[in-house]
Length: 369
Image 1 (cartoon, rainbow, N blue to C red):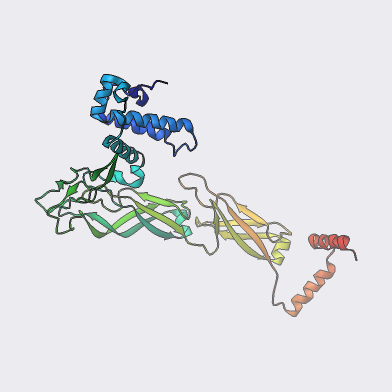
Image 2 (image 1 turned 45 degrees about the horizontal axis):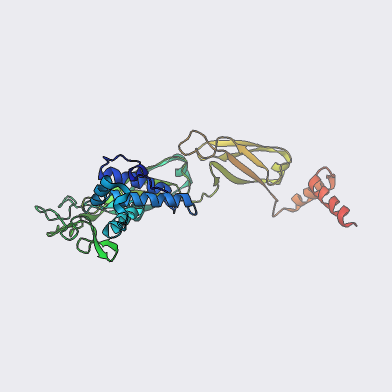
């Protein structure tokens, strides 16, 4: 079976530049990489085909030979061994995994600053209404003395003579080329002969910074707020990282939360439960909610105040307030109170306590006696 044209494999024209070729290969290789399609033989074959085409065309000498003689230029033992193979495989791994491993953060010795995390505790009332908070965060900022370059004022970083500014060096070992971080510049691509005395050549200093953050209404426990560019300053003028604020909501003495709904338990007297009546409950918005208790209300009965729960984050909806009734049995009765309850018991019929009567009736039927 004849091989496909390498330009056709990569989907590029014969006038493609080196940069365009690399972009085309990276895009195609990421789509069919075997790690993304485990067990897919077609994806594996496609990846090998792309790799073979790119190994040839990314090397100027091999590309010139291919343009002139086609696939015949590499027959009779021509192959793809030597430094070209090692170099192309290094490009493959850097293109596919460089972003994940953080190598893409370097650019001319500049490195992106680290992201920061700040834990903030708020009350349920603050989660309901929102909050404007002021924070003091220890962080790294760009050194003003050297403007973040790391070099002493009046001097500049120089391109690393060992790696030529690449940040990596390659060593040939037989048929393979091994690539490693440049030992001179530690992968930055630049060296500083005269470091800034204020920051010791790092390009940044540790300071305490004051920030303002707006906590929107309706946030839940675990909500994350991102402040772009408010993390640590980058090394030697690199871009800053981000600040992530993680919110935790303190437990409320009366309300429990489930999403946008609020729940609370309200004890009422036995008499009020029997005769019915009205109770008043304060909501988080500051209003007083009146709830009607029906006659003969039992423990566990739930009453709902619509729209008196939590606001929905970044929405216009509002949750509900659910009030659960708990009937309280009277304690420390006087002699007269006991007499009245005894009289009430004597006057009671089977219909007065239907649940109790029904329970013991079913038990009698089940066990007899």
